[in-house]
Length: 396
Image (cartoon, rainbow, N blue to C red):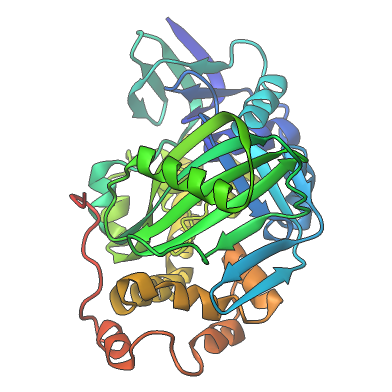
């Protein structure tokens, strides 16, 4: 059985879905198919972002996806200080993304629950025998082991759960980093989103040398954190876990060689995420707008467009990979928090641009200026290319 579209997207996660939504909004003349191997579009995720991460011309679409908006800014907590930053913060839930896709695309154009078995510039083959033919094909699936093997670095891993409380928590804004918790397994912090007066999403996060994740241990630590805040939990709903790469280096040419020839790459499969934070939403929005605004949408044109964009992104990420090398190669285990503690004491605009992946030359000089929060000799060794993390493949 075959179906034909102008554009077919493999991967119904954040990047693939945003491309579909942006095309539906800006190019309604194009027919779009979205294919997701999982049972639902978007999986089970909470994606958060600073409002300033998104260019003004793209904000309307992204704001419409937000399940929660905090215009009073956010807090960070470190052993040396606590600080409130004024930047507005937003969160998108996977069910919001799925609902938006279901509204934007016509019935039958969203395929879920069937794996992709093959991609080529003319279409997508599914495990159930369906063939989706298209003039333009985009691969927005996740990273595979061969691609990871070309990257060097460590891991950001996390477990999160939504807690309904017996009494109001009285929080008015998120805590994006609470590093006052006991440091374990590298740099540890807790992330708290107050979705309603008695409901919070709490995530326990680690910048670790190991990708292994003991979910039950992390959920237990979340229970301890809630108890320490004086919260009585009456119900636990959404649960989420994840392990993301933090990239310190690698061979981008070899990384790109694992792409399907003649097919456009999107999202993390194109390497489009902030190397240090593993943060992908701003880049997903930028690429979605770039694709929607393109003059041509055949596979050859889309592949050329996304290849050039991904290469430029890799070049611009050198500063963030340097900082990641410092964090993983020069900071000593449980002292890694000192790197972020120093960073969050800097100018608020610098912090905003950092998360958006748009640091200026002055920002970079300011981050590197002064006494480093890591041993000087260790930092010099890492800068000289010694002691930096190795390939991501095989790390357990």
